[in-house]
Length: 404
Image 1 (tube, rainbow, N blue to C red):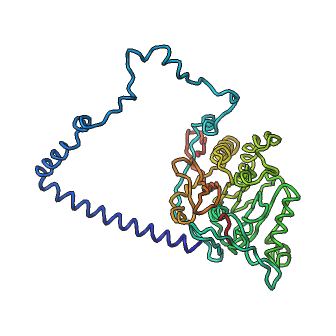
Image 2 (image 1 turned 45 degrees about the horizontal axis):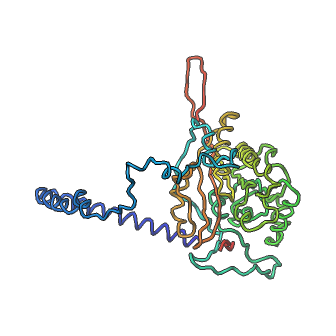
Image 3 (image 1 turned 60 degrees about the vertical axis):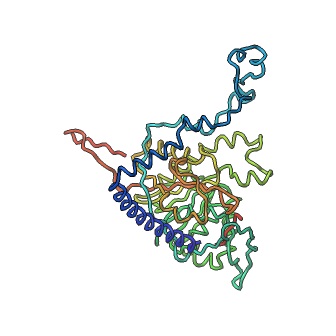
């Protein structure tokens, strides 16, 4: 995957260079054309004769069967043929998710900054099939050390970890870590000095431990006893303040791919309506908690596996509003669109004009990854301070699997 990213980056650079050459040649051509403006004007006038609206209408074939006689159009028999619907019965309380954004505070102005680079760690090896290749990876096998040789996961899950921009020596919190795939990716970079894998229920914590035991033969000696890795069971909203340099918040969501493919325990079942409706509130509280745990200059990445605008940009908007109202912390939203230009040969991303804060991987036939939404937030190192009065008062501004 790293090779594909680098190739795409080279293609983009070559395309930009070609575009500059074309613009230079067009500039020369335009200057030559202006030497004989009279000839150009005559040619344009001759062309306009053949494409005039009047001449086109004169030669057009008109379908008279679609014309309505104005003398009979208001008669009762014709009017009774069509009765427009005034409303749809059974959906009186239905609200489109797109309309839900109207309830957000439009006066909230987030500080958005473009990011042009996405680092792919040298020791992180990720493999995928090329587009339109529908082969399946074989199941992992155990080697001489008794652990599996690779981990299968949805390709969309790679990007939130890359968005964290993990650096050597980082202290990382994976707030909702189960089943453990993204934590495994973070460890594979060999950068973290300390990683906390957390989840709220015992069953999910056990899933994390199972994954780690299956892929790290020296888990206890080299990682847990060396205090480099810790697995905890806490409510992410109640974690006490610690200065993490990176926090990943892969929140519980509607899990759209699973919901489409499986009926068992589906969150869209009638019996789970209340749980589903409370998801955005839970998600925003988890993100808010993560933003309070990260240290100055640190990065928070919020992610879901949902297409829902409310669970994605909507939750980010709510968390930004709460952090502004309840604390003096300031965050920058990182626009990763320029940096993600290099991944277009592997992923299909939602149109940037449709997204307010984050990026969304959309499943499509040729490369069936996602859906995966992720948004990168960075805590500002210093607040912008403005002196407002002589009394020294201050105010702050401010195939859907891959191999790993």
